[in-house]
Each structure stands twice: as C-alpha cells, then as structure tokens.
Image 1 (spheres, rainbow, N blue to C red):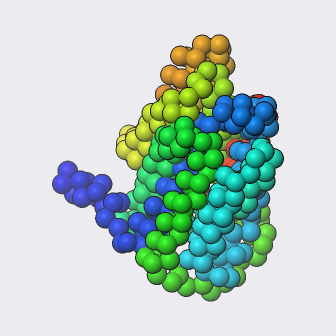
Image 2: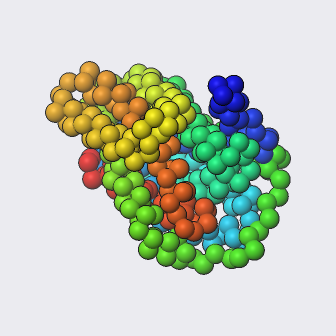
Length: 356
C-alpha cells in the first residue's frame, strides 16, 4: 500500500517535455506577480510617487487580466491553445520590456496593463494545457501547476530584490528576458494543439457564473484575493525595509511556505480533514494574521513575521480552491478557469489601490 502511494505521489513530476515547457513559463509568469514587490518603496521614492500611485502597478495589471479572462476561451477556441499561449507570452515579453524603458509611474502602469492582457491569455490557457497534457491524473496536474505557482511566487521577489538593487528597471527587463526563453521553449516543445470542435462564445464565462457552485467559489476567491494582494501590494511599506534585497528575502521566505504547503500541505490536509473543513480553518487563519498585521502595523518585526507565516495559508488555499473550481463547474475547464479568473482577479486588482 505504502509503495503504491509513493509511486502515485511521485507521478506529478514525471511529465512530457511539453508540460515542463508550459510549467517553466508558468513559473516565470507567476514571478511577475511578486517581482515588483521589493521595488515598491524604491519606485515611490525615485519616481516621487505616492503608495496609491505605485499600487496601480498591481491594479492595472490585475484588472486588465480579470476583464481579458472573459475573452480567452473565445480566442483559444479559434486559434488553439498553443497559439493562445504564444500570443500571451509575446505580449508579456514586449510590455514587460517596455515597462523598464519609461521614466514615470504612469508609463509603467500603462505597460503593466498590456502585460496583464498577455497574462490573462497565458494563465487561463496554461492551466487547461497542463491538465490536458500531464500524466498522473487531474490532481497531479493541479499539484504541478501549483508547484509552478509557488516557485514563481517564491523566486520572483528575490530576483526582483537582486535586480532592483541594481536599478528599479532591472525586474522588468528580467521578466521580459525570462519570458522570451519560455516563449522559445513553448514553441519548440509544445506540439500543435487541436482547435476545439465547438467555438466558445465571447460571453460563455459570464454565463457559466450562473452556476451557483462556480459563482460561490469565485466570490470566495475575490474576497481571499483582496487579502492576498493587500499583503503583496501594501505590506512592504510598514516593514520599513528600504533595501530591495532585504524585502526580496522576506517575500522569498513567504513564497517558500506558499510552495511547500501548496504541493505537500494541501494534499495531506485534504486527505486528513476534507476540502471544505480545511478551507474554513484556512480562511479564518489568514483573516487572523491580517488582523495581527493591522494591530501591529507600527512594529516592522510583527509585520514581517506575520507576512512570512501567511504563506502557509496562501499555499493551502491556492491548491484547494483551484481543484474545487475545476471539480464543481458544469462547463469545460477552460471556460471555468476564465470565469473563476475573472472574478478573483477583480478582487486582486482593486485591493492594492483601495488599501493604499
């Protein structure tokens, strides 16, 4: 029994090259979320911008990602999953690079919006491609996807801290270069994907939200992402760390916990307690930590420790909600992914600006 379980546990990481190519691109894509974290205070200082103005880097990126999610299925059903991924990657390469060339916060915010469009095309399609191409079953594919998410979120802030220590432009050029590598890997290793037999209508994701289970999960994710992106978008300021690398290490430690609990903690908790009870306790735990940060906001140590520990709850939540959404939905997985992504990224986009 135990040897069989060991084989099953190992299977998510024995994958065709095509899956690894997309997974690598996922890592880099998720790096883009936390990459700008360590340079937020530096950007505010060097570009003479307020925290609210700088927070628009998250808002423009995520709100555009959210709205564009609605149309991803429409695009993918006409040009196929591979070319949708490639289009998304090209947009990220171009707009991330352009964001590093401007001299004002408004220009960066504008190019981050274009980056968000590429992100929507990529994220929504990549999950469907990994689920469709991976060996080891549906749960194994989700674990692989969440591993990529966890690695990207962990490494992004550290890389952002290193590059941001050289120049605030460094993180933007870094993402552009890494995504160019991911673009080549996807072109070479991902075989042509057949176009779906049925073309998806533009409003299919919105129609899918009439399903109560999917809508409930979406609203839960919107509220959760409000807390998550409050951490990412505003917590760097009360930490009082002006060195991008120091901030990078804090969010690297946080991201390691995200990855560990997404890959190993979530499956264990799911087997031991069930999905719903784990989510109940998890959301209460994250809410309590946010309250601790709010009450201890004048103490950088309290904020730093609480932010790092929140990685436990973020990791568990990411894996369990992604699985639950894919299982609860009555529609095809790409449409479910787009509908869910639309609702949750609205929360992620509005939160940093609102809190700042």
